[in-house]
Every structure is written in C-alpha cells, then in structure tokens.
Image (cartoon, rainbow, N blue to C red):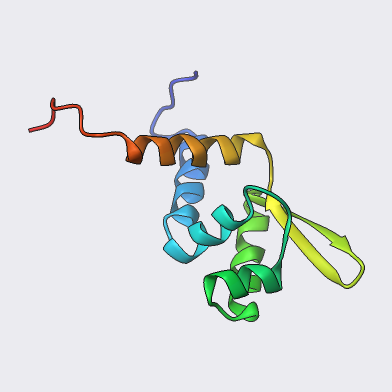
Length: 105
C-alpha cells in the first residue's frame, strides 16, 4: 500500500469518498445496493424515503463511483460499483461487530 503525503490528491479524493459515505442516509442506500441490483422505488420503500430523495443521493453516489446503474426498460437498477466498495463496507461492518479488544483506555 502506498504511503500518502498531505499534498497527495489521493488523500483528498479518499476524504471525499468517506464524506459521502459518512451520511447515514447515503450509507443506508449503498448498503441496500450491496447484495443485488435494486430499483430506486424498492430502495425508497425499504428505507421509508421518497424516491426523489433516493434519486438525489444516488446521483451523488454514482458521480463518486460508489454505485453504478443499469437501465432495464423503464426502471434503473443500482448496485455497488465494484468489489472494492462492497469489500470495504463488509470489512467495516465486521469491524464494528467485533468486541472491544481490551487495549483501549
């Protein structure tokens, strides 16, 4: 893994990525897209959000390459962009499920 310096643009891009995922609504939307492609209406229904709000967040997530879209007829289905995104989310969910290791103050 590369070591980043303060001036590295990769650090800024990574911070932007985590900033997008730091919003609970956006994170819930991305998590809804992990298992299989899902339509906007299904995401909205399962998360009890409006379709327009979900669409707004999905535009941001798609621009950041966190999710990808695929049109099937009149519907657009969203899924995580690649294995990197779903892997990071899976790893972080495992991390928070671990019991404290006892080395913390």
